[in-house]
Length: 113
Length: 114
Image (cartoon, rainbow over all chains, first blue to last red; front, top):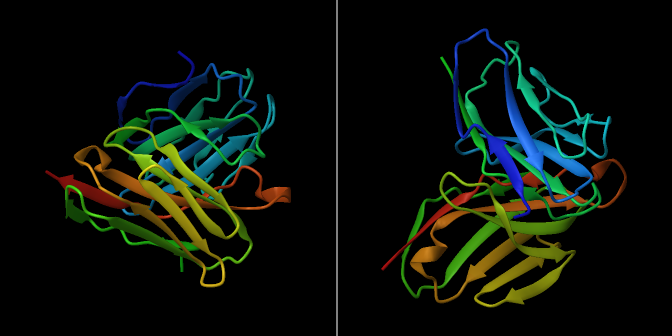
């Protein structure tokens, strides 16, 4: 089945630790995205990538980092500099960055204590 | 002030009711308007898409865009318990540096009870 996988579904970390969230897609899409979802705030764009070895900051990039070494993979690292890391993180992809339709993965719920 | 405002609800209706979900926006440059549906603990999925103004119908769902009022709506006819989900509106400007950037509303939680 084609789609986007995110792992793990739930992740727990201690404050001060960096953590990397996985996102893999087998849709052969060029563009990939990371969003953060908090209650009552909708989805906010963290980073996006138009193509391999390229990525752009979204609206709330501070405290996060990404890489895009392979077309299929777009991992997100939540660093200790992120003030409020506890959230639901969603990865998405689209055929190209021009496409209005983004396909979402199932999400990773990160809890930092 | 947020660029896109959406009443978070929650909204509870009986099965068979007509549901109206709405978003207002402040940026007149938005040209692409979308509605996503998100079931609990899942990722959103695209439900409806409209470019610029007008109506679009797909089965029990109708999306309306009124650019003069900066207002979009999603209507669900003959609502079913399986429609219970969070509905998110999303918008995008056309072209240039706007590629890839969707702006989402806060989402409306809908429950349809039998």
